[in-house]
Image (cartoon, rainbow, N blue to C red; front, side, top):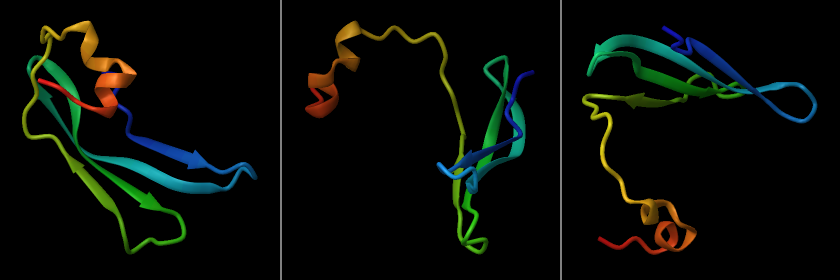
Amino acid sequence: DHVVLEHAFYDQDGQVVKTLKTLEICDMGGRTIATRQRMQKADEPGEWTEIAVREVEYDLELRDSLFTLSNLRNPRD
């Protein structure tokens, strides 16, 4: 299913700085995705940031201008 279970981030010296771990995997919208992930710094094991996905939508029609540098800096409707 190609869901990342764990991803380590390294500094220039090859030392692990952060780790992203997948805690829950579910099927949503006909696809298998990570629905709960935790990012944790190597030097602060008691602190983390958690990402939770509660719903998804796929194959949305998005206009090309949505991702221009100008629009990303100053979003317009």
